[in-house]
Image (cartoon, rainbow, N blue to C red; front, side, top):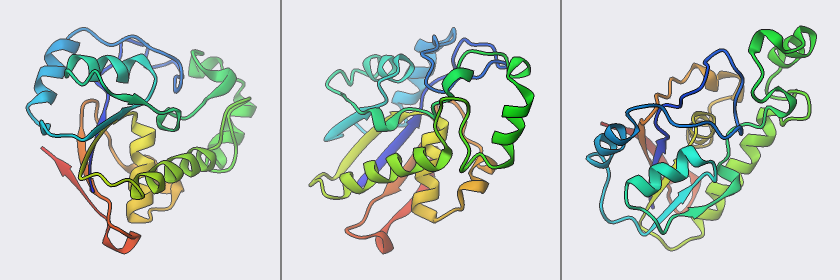
Length: 187
């Protein structure tokens, strides 16, 4: 199965604020960004699946993929009580604890990266059992990094070294079993 994965287009939100599952508005230029993306995509997806956040759903709608399915497993990391706060206003002791081991520690009332990875791995494993040739997924950078970790067995501690730009498209080939999986960037 061929899986095309897109990170949503830029958001109109203060870069100094924490957001993961916070529903942020899209930035100016959204229509032009969506048109540019449409040139990189196939026109024969058997299934389109998006994160339920509006920044992903609106992109699917703008790309005329209105029959897309929403899946909560494709949500970005849950930053819990930190959502929407300025990074500098977050309790420094709690922030430092999380940063020392973001794989196993969670933001206050949020989720760990390990928990997020497990839901993404479950999502990918569920796709493996589908009888589909080509799927499009619209989601977030953290989710895409978990895709990379899954397909290339990258340790979770290293996934933030992977640059994922807004509107970037990746291609993953999901084989009948893990040894036949592969990955590449579409441009």
